[in-house]
Image 1 (cartoon, one colour):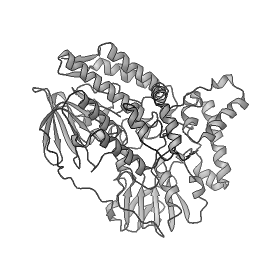
Image 2: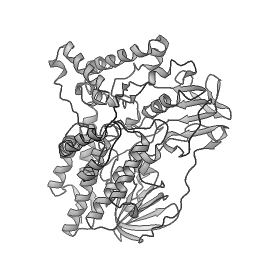
Image 3: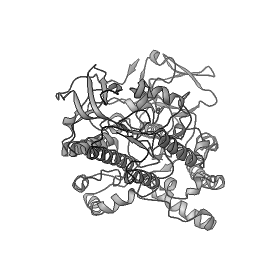
Image 4: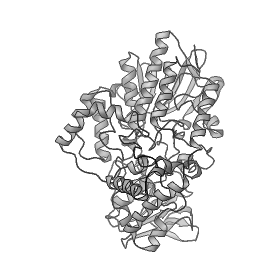
Length: 548
């Protein structure tokens, strides 16, 4: 079996001290900013990154067609107006190579690389109660110690790549989208299979379809889609965005989703059918996620509204698909629009009109195993392939942390606790793990329920300000109390259980991972509401935290 080339760990040129004030795991959007903030506060910081460079999601996810679905003007850092204005996005939704270049630009302009050890994966992090420190061990066997440990490992960074039995027997090439090789993959004339039709699978399918000899899409759950409108940005266009820097910065911090748009169309019940349709048509034409995150919030709570919006989208899809068989396979009916993560697409539906594209319905005949020739389904068929692409998603939210051996007070293991129930305090701390802070973690808004740069920067700022407050007090340790954590989990669940999202099986609920405890992984009360909770805790002197 030929697989994507994995980079071998090797020491970097920098040889940091074995003990520092803070250790940061990850060099993505959050990790870079977290190191920047701590360094500016005068702390010694050591960052670790499994990849060979910065970028996080935009380093690992280099599959064909990978690109933003947040607008370039809001997927930004807000700590430097000069950084914002001096970067030049080429389009509204830049592709992966441009985004990776942007994060390298940020790292270079702020001189952050020297604080990271690349090609270094963290294997374990154990809290030393006597010393009040975290002992962090890398896969190379090195140990580093720090007062504070901050995880910036990402919401979607633990790929489900060992999904089917027999994968090692496949004679062709097999790739997971989240571990795509840097080298070009040749699809021309090849028999290609794609497993998974979420946002990633859709981007891959629409991108490679014109190149392949044949394409088999192993489809289980069809997706609602929104056509992407992706105009090019000239330098003059970006100069206009730069003039709005402060306006946009303030706006995204107070909307429901951390995007610039919000639910401002009035109540569904107050509008006539014609007015509702006018709103939906306008947002559909915008070619963004606004139809989902800025049309009518009632679609998350009211089944009748959900069905009306869903039928609007289904009708749009039927217009493009035409073929009744394709409509039956590709248009969702078993769940409502917006209760799954909604992808933007460019010509995805039209791919299925190509004579060399075939849908393999794995709801009717599930994949049983991978065999040397290809994919064997439950009906006994073997689908012969040269290349197999697994767009099978992630162990979202919790997976990146449970794949590290994290142990807190009394040797308690985070993996064991979260295998029973996933609990956090605002996604920022976990009771029982002193001085461990987390970004992009469960029970905080993230991963499409929030524009990630908005939410990650807010969490980094809260963590940094909290550490600064501790230092000013002369305190050494902070840990969320059991009572505070219980209070947040209760609020999170109460908020989630009012929505239709919890009634739908998706990675939002952990349903894609066998045995994973069921709980909505992202806070759905709104970015503005979450921010207020965090601000109130800080203004109240971090009441509910054990500080000593």
